Image (tube, rainbow, N blue to C red; front, side):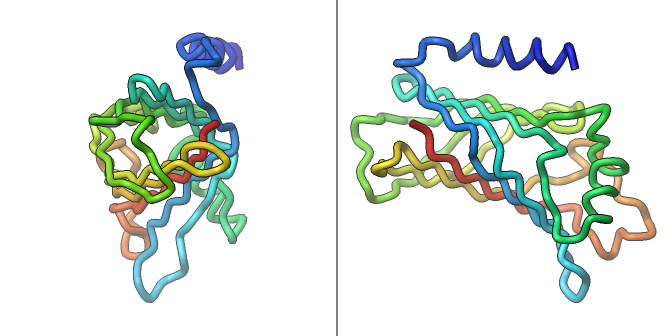
Length: 179
């Protein structure tokens, strides 16, 4: 717990000048690792923090693993205990930069951007490139991204018993409106 508080303090200190940063604490991440003809393996976390520096395009997010909710409680339990080991690895973080970002040119029509950065999950860090649609709304700047991660890349083992029912390729959708 002490490490988590320290991390959160460092995370917020890195983005401390409030007038230069935009933030949300209720961003959404949905992931799906379903395989056709089997039960849906899908979860959503609606308490994700995202911070954007609109001047530089730097972006960071933090998701607590125990914040993901499944339709089936047993799946949620297996996810936390066996797959992502939430007690050992309580969070996932992303830190990167939106390429060619200029907040002053945003309109209500979403534009395509590329975000490059590092995703840390399950104790492993990997460079990733994410496509995103970004637009200006009355509520702030909306960032929507769909991408795929491989469970293998983050040392998340799928037991052989369910290997045919859970996909190694995990579809991820992020939705943030920072203000």
